[in-house]
Length: 124
Image (cartoon, rainbow, N blue to C red; front, top):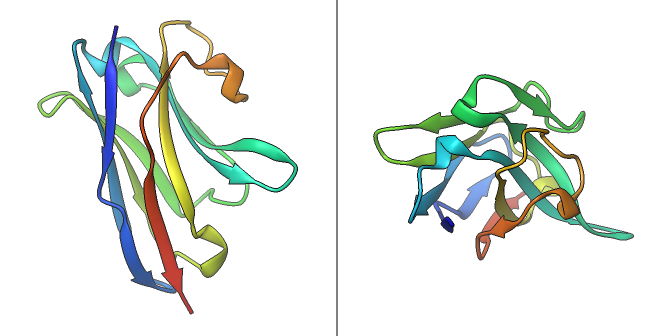
């Protein structure tokens, strides 16, 4: 069983960049499929990015495609989310999640382990 802790959130101006990390303990994060989520109107959490086991494949929501990149750092046992060209609409608490299931699920229900979230605020 893995425990997840996010870090790296903060305040950044529009157009800027931020990198948030999800550190795993108790298990190797590359053994899990991972997801990044944030709250959305009408639903509890919307998918932002997905990453397969070992980080071989990634998928992104249309609204972050080309701006956000998720990757696995095996040395640090983290999954990271590099966020570029941020805009105020990206302001949210970002959560990382993990599952031992093979499929990179789109919904929050597909993930079994969650971090506590990290706040990202983009000022205009």
